[in-house]
Image 1 (cartoon, rainbow, N blue to C red):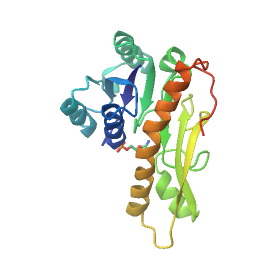
Image 2: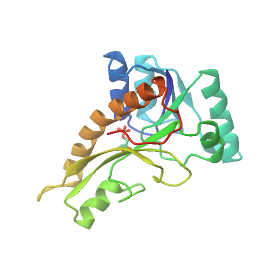
Image 3: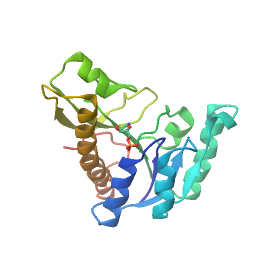
Image 4: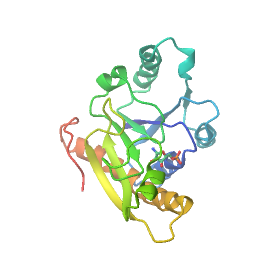
Length: 201
Ligand code: GRF
């Protein structure tokens, strides 16, 4: 199963997905890493492990549709079946959503629907909640709004700092993302309808 990872930043989730493929716990081929930022560390990481990269900067395109049509051509030529967003800081538009209906997933550092958007750990701390977590969900046109596939809680302790919370959240992300991708792929192979948007527990 060919997958593409989309990322804009550090790429720690990309790295654990690569490791999971290498150690055999994720039965997939990372056929492409797509980044919308040419300064993203994740690009270097992909080059190091020999994953083909596609670097496309949206401001070089007149429209979002044009940008996504270009991405789509690359996804098709690499025979990509699943699109895995891992710190991709951009909303996916109708062009990609229609072509990959039910096949685009995202990871978000909160228990959605709480704290969507860019600053989820900060907002959880500020709100004083005692539990936040990680959500993996199908992507739709909204910001962190698609059907939920998997969630894992993270407790917030008395003396939690933003740095310590982010670390705890990433630890959980790195465990949950590869294994959830594996479950999605396995379920599809067993004949579960590919776009049957049910959760995995
Ligand atoms: C993760 O915390 C993820 O939940 C969010 O962006 C972050 C990406 O981190 N969507 P990394 O680039 O994988 O290290």
